[in-house]
Image (tube, rainbow, N blue to C red; front, side):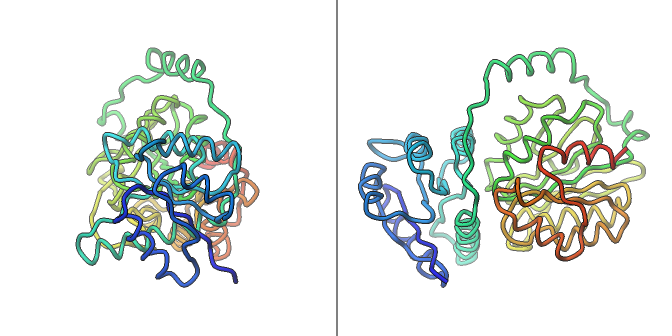
Amino acid sequence: MDKIQVMIVDDSAVVRNTLQDIVSAAPDMEVAAVAQDPYVAAEKLRRVVPDVIILDVEMPRMDGITFLKKLMKQHPIPVIVCSSLVQEGSQTLMNALEAGAVDIVTKPQLGTKQFLEESSVLLTDSIRAAAVAKPRAVTPRPSSQARQKLTADAILSKPKVTRSAMAETTEKVIVIGASTGGTEAIRAVLEVMPLDSPGIVIVQHMPPGFTRSFAERLDSLCAITVKEARNGDYVLRGQALIAPGNAHMLLKRSGHRYYVELKEGPLVSRHRPSVDVLFRSAAKYAGKNIAAAILTGMGADGADGMVELRQAGAWTCAQDEATSVVYGMPKEAVARGGTTREYPLETIAANLLKAAN
């Protein structure tokens, strides 16, 4: 099988060399070209067409987001945004996903051996996912519609619900796992969730620092409340909790209430947070009260957890191949017997609600 051809675009020689070493060490990929800025990259793209581009955000002469938008219009190639920006630049990176980037990874740092090894695992997995990702047309969302919806929801549709009131009403919980292509898939599911939807708990593979902006963006688009989870948060109706990057999230139960617990620890199924960790805890503590969906993503994270959910009596489903950016995680869940139901992305929310009700 031909090796995955990778182009690296970054203005730092140290970062370029580190990324080159990581890519070259993988047996199924190789560096096709390197460039210190988008202009050099554009010249090299005349001669070399890589399978995947690793792109920095902050560069001289042209920033990475501008280059990404031009690339998606003229010659769509799967792009992984690799950045050191965390909190202060996380909204910029959300814009990169909306502009067509397949994934976001943080730059590997020359720290401990374990940190570099984990960075290598996450980067090479992201490259493999990008190489098989389906190119998608990027259609700008009408900002006026989003503002109108946010205004109406903020004034009329987001009453605060006390935790004590939820003790008797939280019966069902929706759990969702996703990876490559999942940011837009999760948006599609959450945007149509009604205010009285069951509590929702989500693991999306994402680096630390970016999940808060991801949650805030979704909160501005959805009728339900969306927030980055904190340790001990209760699972409430009309609210979705998103696992923070770099922390595993478990669903636990105290009396009649469900809550989330955040934990450190090694990678599980090659990820942190891991969908398997969430799904297995949901099977243990909630069982038949769960409605679960596994969405687009590379690899098998969540597949074994979905098997445990189904065995515990939960309702489970997977996103179908036609609408998945990468049909990896859903495929594995079906193959291992975690679910027999596959749905197009646009119908998953309705089916989750039907199952939960």
